[in-house]
Amino acid sequence: MQSRSAGALRTRVVWATALALAAVTALLGTAPAAAPAPAPADDPPVPVLTWGPCEDTDAGAPDDGFECATARVPLDYRRPTGRTIPLAVTRRTAADRAHRTGVLLLHPGGPGNSGVDFVRNSHAALPASLRDAFDVVGYDMRGVARSGQVECWNDEEYSAAVGAARGVPGPGALHAAVRQGLEFATACHRRAGDLVPYIGTGSNAKDIDLLRRALGEKTLSFYGRSFGSHVGTVYAAQFPRRIRAMVLDGAYDPHRYADQPYAYDAAQFAALDAAVGRFLDWCAQNATTCGFGEGRPREAFERLKRALDAAPVVTASGRPATGYTLAYRLMFNINAGREIWPHLGRALRAAQARRGSFLLNPLSPGTFDFLTVNTAVECADRRYPAARPLLGALVGARAAAAPLLGPPIGLGPPSYDHNHAPACAQWPAERPSRFEGSYRAAGSAPILVLGTTGDPDTPYQDAVALARTLANGRLLTFAAEGHTAYNRSACISALATAYLATLALPAPGTVCADEPPPAASGRHTPIADLVVDETRDVIPAQRTRTVG
Image 1: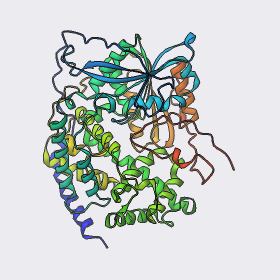
Image 2 (image 1 turned 180 degrees about the vertical axis):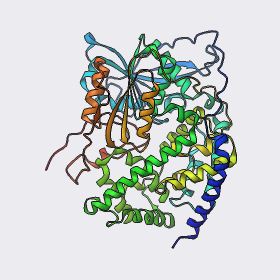
Image 3 (image 1 turned 135 degrees about the horizontal axis):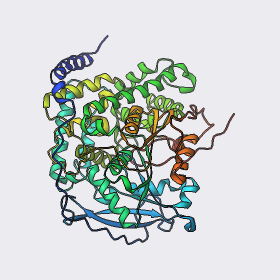
Image 4 (image 1 turned 30 degrees about the horizontal axis):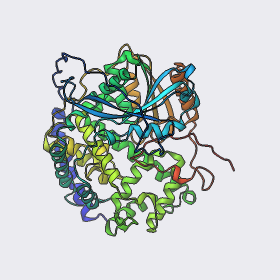
């Protein structure tokens, strides 16, 4: 029998969808672009990088071979010789100096992940051919970590909003999501209004080119994953002849991301729910290996969300874990692909039994920092139609169309990519750092785009669209589950590494299909090495797998 809250939600969604249909033709399409800013009269000064020992990094001791520096770049590129802001930069120089190729810039996902930590935590996972030939460089984007962390809500405000969120939102959740979006956007403008207009990807790409010049390089090699792929796309669009080689992994469709954001969000919700659905279907067919749901995992998952909402688990930290916590953690950990499916099943079973489970880890202050930047950068990049009725109609419709995780994520507080509309459609800040222009990057070197067919986060069709958009794009496909491809597939890694090292491209239409199967208990990598932490993106190490 349908619950009163479920019936109320469905009634609101029917009304919202009808209202959306009346407005969508006029408002859902590409938003009008702002008039291009006039060309600056002066070029910004090239930063001076003074390299020294690193401090305050995840990787540990300052004598691990990495150097750190600070680059001062313009806050507002319309005033290139005006106020500057500091960017934290790190590098590890090429091991084979006699055969050095140049600089390889690594850019993490997010937005919100530290590029300094990304390089330091990922360097050992790179093939020796890249570590030997390249100075490997990373930086914290403006507004991230050591480069002036943006704060909108403080930890107490974010914690209260998350604590009130539910895995099965009840009556009033849609109204609350729109209200919280406005509160978050207003707090960003009030507490970080001197920075948030300038953290968009257009300015980030210009920062990268200043770093290239500061490093003394004519061209860069670049690897960007997830949101880092969009930064790479915009860099290529603005500086196409400054690219030696570029790999964009887990790519964005730049047009829909920036100019058709409601449509982009709908595709993300659909991809996420489809991936979770495939996992639960696998559980239904492999009940013993999965260990959750006793052959009916979808029904068990819905019951678990409701049970945690009704009686949250108090964790070791003292913070409660609700159905929202479960949905949020599953959203990120489904990114690890089929290898983690048995671990996810056991983690769901542990949550069901109210025992320790990584799916019940409450959101932490580090998570709040990540989510703040994730929302603020995308609000600086994207133009949602400003019509309030359309906002409520489409947010409700998108959540209902993805029943597994759509309602908790879409109707929860401002957090990850899928639910930025409530904040960004009510964003009070100007967007001078948003990129306005063609994404074709005509005249660039070949750009290798990696797409994973079952990607829950950046749908595979985005990679197809980006490869077609770029004047010199080449698509390389990973037929697999999970988010991004590099070092999750020996085939993908070999081809992408060969391109970065030697500029040899894979043949058009190449598809790699070597994703490892779901790992049986005790036979593969320990679960601690598979769990996804959204605040600490890394290039995964190639795993050594045993048989039998």
